[in-house]
Length: 294
Image (cartoon, rainbow, N blue to C red; front, side):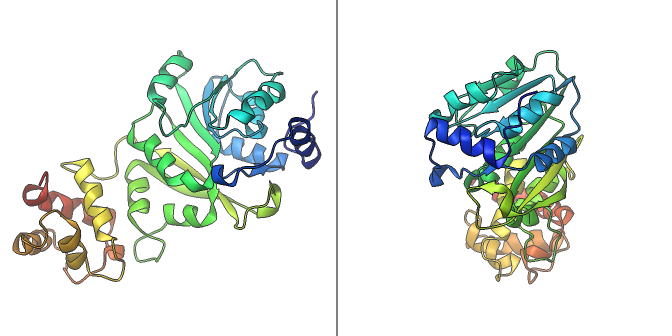
């Protein structure tokens, strides 16, 4: 048996061997605790028939644990300096494919179709670079990938926003978007001490399980998200004020806006953070005819 990558000693040795220095701009924090990695993998519920998509493998600590339990791992790495390291650390595993690409620019659907042929169970499992957590998760959900769900490590503060309920200060358009596509739960809190270098904040692992169909039915998905984002533009403002200033021609169409709020049964004096996803779906459908495609 070869030693796990995710120990402080082995991680240091690998980094020294390659003279690797961390790039702050890429949000590189490597996990040095094998137990935590195994827990993350457990939460993904993978089997020898599963495929895993990973983003930002670093030196392969999580990749290795995924390779042990799944049929195939496909990993997106943006930092060219890590490619030779990964080739070395992951050499014992023949079921790993590293793709040198920015996942935000990649056609992930195409990659999945190519790499996971004959595999019907696919999960995204990753220790996400903190500075692009939200765009990555939203891309994976909006592009309708053939995945069962997502298990990712991210900043605890972002995890709190993702699983927030209406009426809390963490609740916002991100909470609604995630809830629309998935069921979200925070499964683990991770102290900053298990990373090298240590980040300034604690982390959390969230599990997002994709819904069979979105939680609410809306006339137009893109417009629904436009309305939710507009409603939180300035948290202290009422929903009426936010929509007036944020929607196209909102100022000219004050009457139509009030009428739509009225039809949706929503008091214009409420704040966006008090509205449930069902209320947002009613509201965006009522606004649709007057404000869509301006």
